[in-house]
Length: 142
Image (cartoon, rainbow, N blue to C red; front, side):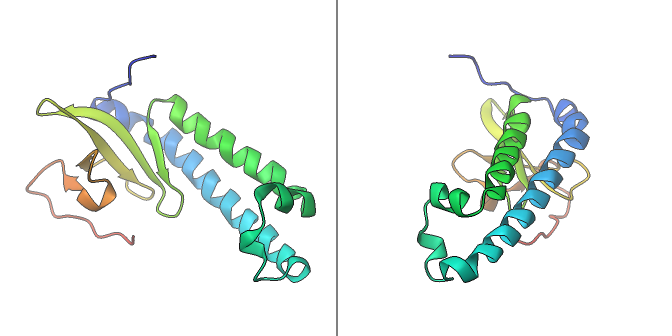
């Protein structure tokens, strides 16, 4: 088993342009997937749509297969850098690091220009703390 990559803040910030492009792509793909699912709704029935297995959805609408595969590939590209894709809706990506001898996550949300927050692994996004304790916490939708 390979050891987890740990980032320095400058290193994680330097990756953000590449990460941001990929998160943006994932969000665009999600919009297309929702559009394709909406197109299936009249045929499948809106009530039945959430109960259909992915296999059934792809059989009914083959365009979904390519969209799901492209999304999965893009998530893999993000994770190959050593960071963790944590959420589609908010566009969350975590970068493992060490602060005060503890492995924590540098926490970036799509739209932020640099990494300014971290959280303990057990706390997640809700436990975000500013890296610079004197800075004002930015408010984001969640």
